[in-house]
Length: 159
Image (cartoon, rainbow, N blue to C red):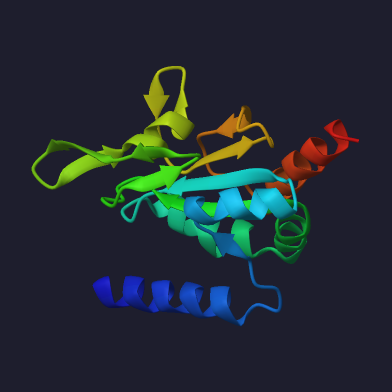
């Protein structure tokens, strides 16, 4: 079974990197300078390494050519591991990893962006406007079609 999972993961990884369109991923540190030149909404995909739905969304929804085209053309995209242990400075504010036990914890920025009704679950998607206000949040697997609809609605609302 473990061998099958390794093969399946390797295949998904290959498909991700052999797709025609490549999703341009940025760090939070890059967003500040990118926003100065071209003010865009920021889409943050919040995941963990152990979440099977996160991996599925990365292997399907986030490599869909329509979504990649929309994200690359109209948004800044950030992938944030909720268990990232390095400090992230965003808009001049340092966000840090908060341990909750032995080898467990959550990054403050992931917690801030992924909390919906007092709960955090994965995968989460958060869209920030140019003023860094949350304009959309979800905390479940989004299909390619669902993400495309959400991105299109965000764009239409700004026309």
